[in-house]
Length: 310
Image (cartoon, rainbow, N blue to C red; front, side, top):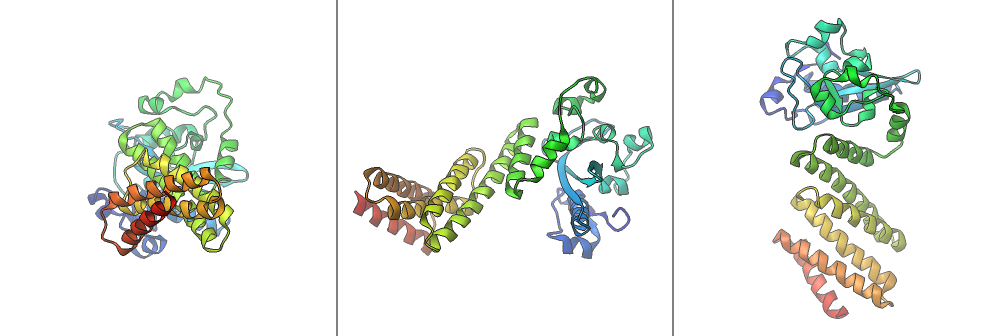
């Protein structure tokens, strides 16, 4: 990979925004930033039926010791013969031509590098991806205090933690990853990224609930709508919603009300709950100030149903 790809300087000049949108773009252009190197290695490892992950995290310039406010680098973790290893094809290619004290000090490159050396200038989103028996804190990473950390007995098992992480769904992995980044380095941008990971899960749950609603499986739909609304509430408390997320949040309330009415319209608590979700949907849709036919029809439907209920 270090010979196949060259670094995408056009993306670097564009504030490191990716030009490649998928694996085919990477293969065709033969250029990429760190995420593209890591993504292509992960794809090839998957094809070879190897356990491999693209890891995001913080990098450190060993000259200036500067660390970004947000994750700014990506590399890989791979499992071979029940053991985990780290590699960084981007830095292994040396395409940026930067002075690399890591190589000069240890006469090693970034392929299956010993974890304690890799940790000198790589801090992953999740601590267990350090592959250290006693993981560094973010403060230790910034301060380069790995030597003192070795003496501690943390009783930590990174293999178990990685296995538990791999057993989770991709949306849940992204939530864990972004939450960990925020807790390591709390700031507004990292909190927003965490919130949007939660909102992604909320929308996936809503889409699953919509399918159950459409196919008449109302109890299952109600349960998923309720779970989705919990994620929407959590995510909206951490990030500013985009318009399409706000609309999805509103329709989650509206669809919840429709299903709840079908199941519980004979009870006063059920009717009150339906009215509550209709009002929540109305409030969110009004925030959109949209001329969309779909939104206008939804608002009209809400007013009619509230009038009938009240």
